[in-house]
Length: 337
Image 1 (tube, rainbow, N blue to C red):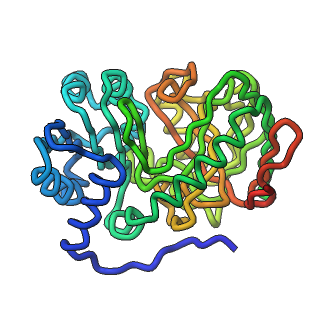
Image 2: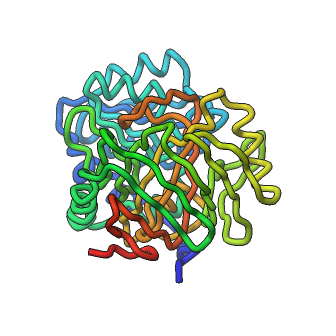
């Protein structure tokens, strides 16, 4: 039975300093002489501060506070994009996701190592960032290597998900919390194997039954946790054909309507690998939960796709089974081999 909450505890600043040290040393391997940018907004500044304070003890570190963007994937502006290109390392604890924005893509092309933390909460910061990154990396990389030769995937789940799609020519990425090479990217807390499906190849039904973006309040409302209500998305030739469900399905329609015309393209398929993550209604944590899969809509140019959009919206599915080229890799949320 999937967990849907985590135990809350009162954070201590000494804990956050140690957590920040793990992020800088284990996840990013920041070295003296490198330039580090902490990119945040007013909602997440209190979580950016411990990172900034620790960073200053290691190397040249800058804290930049930007306006809260409208939705996940919304560009932070040209000035921010240009600023990001001046740094070796970028840490981004923000309200809305900047992970797949042009700002991060261009910074990575310049060699920046990027760690985003979209929608991070006190709870996630204090509980999920301290993990065994070596064990997580071994598990995640093993699954990635298993998937890398795949050409066609079939994904099904008891909630109604039933889709087929091609991944031929597309690379699977292991997001294991280790961001050590120039241009590398992680999304902390981490733990997933992801791919950009061949955009026009996916057909079928996606039944999101755990959580779905937006998971923070927007002008259109909030979705988040879906344990009492599913959002059913029918997909044809890689694009959303219909969205069914209750009020939360309506929120999802409104967000897509406000975005650009390519927001309805299926952008991502990924499998969670983090045994320490639990479902809480926050995509940053939920999409990493071991035994789940997630799909996303919108932009995927940052990880090998061809669809440029101003949004990237993830949704999480429980108890999936995943077949690669006729062989079951995951059955009912558990690795088959």
